[in-house]
Length: 195
Image (tube, rainbow, N blue to C red; front, top):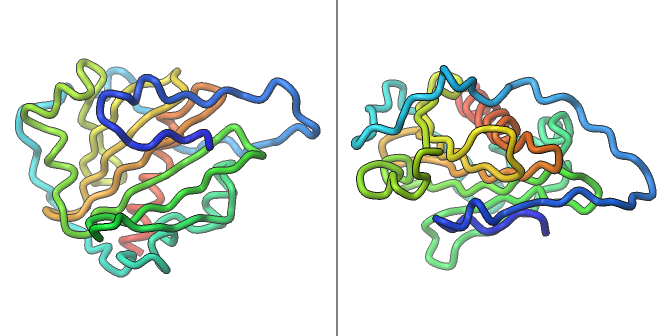
C-alpha cells in the first residue's frame, strides 16, 4: 500500500515511488484544483479561525457511507481507484476510506471525524507538527490546513467542516503533485456535503 498511516511527524517519510516497470501505461485525468500558490498560503496562526459556514456531514458517519464523501466517479476523474475500502477506528472516533491501488501512482486515504475537532487540533502547540510547511488555506469556502506544498510525493490536508467535524486527507502522488491531489479531493468533499 503506497499510503502511509497518518502519523504526526512521519509525513515527510511517506513516499510513493512510481513503478519503474509497468505492463501498461496508466493515464490519469489532470487535477482540476491546483495546490495553493505560495502567495496564497497563510502561515498557521496560534488559534484556529472560526468556521463561518458549518457543514453537517453526519450522513457519511457510517462504514457504509464514509466513502461517499468522494464518489467513485470523482475518484476515477482524479486518477484514483474507483473501488473504495471503508473501515472505522476501534473506538468509533473516526471512519476511514482508502482508495489505494496497485495500478496507479496516486493514492488517497481519508479519515472522517464526525465528533472531534480535528481541524482545531492543528493549531496551538500542535502547529509545530508541520513546522514551516503547515499553512492555512481555503478549500471551497471551508478552512483547512495543508502540510506541505508541491512538488512533493505525500501531503496532508485537514479540512474543517464544523466545530466538531473534520476530515484529514492524506494523498500520495508519484509525480510529486500530492498537495494538488489532496486539495482536489477536499474540494469535492465540501461540494458533496453542500450538495
